[in-house]
Length: 112
Image (cartoon, rainbow, N blue to C red; front, side, top):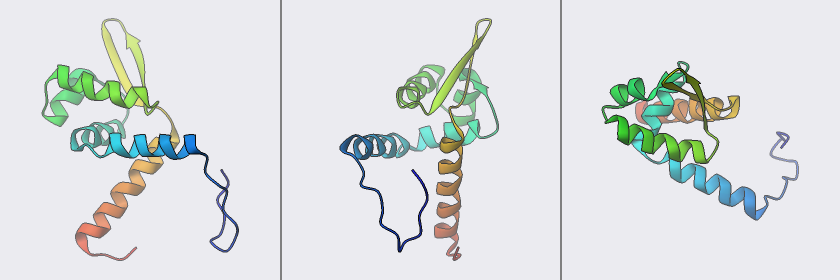
């Protein structure tokens, strides 16, 4: 979808687009999943590394990663017995970074 100025007519969102965006926001509303995505901003990580950084068990990390994978937000790459997770697209990275910038400004009271 092209970025337009506010004065221009906006494209109408389809029901499927709205539902997918709502599912994505719902999945991202979980602090543990946000910590996992934040860790993935630094590059690929294994379940073990993600569990350690998020302070959860490997089983819990796998469960959280499955939710992110179901929405195509993360990808996997197998290397021997280890599975490496990474962010699926630049869109996920950009969206998350923007959300963090906004949260930082909101918490600090700084205007954008």
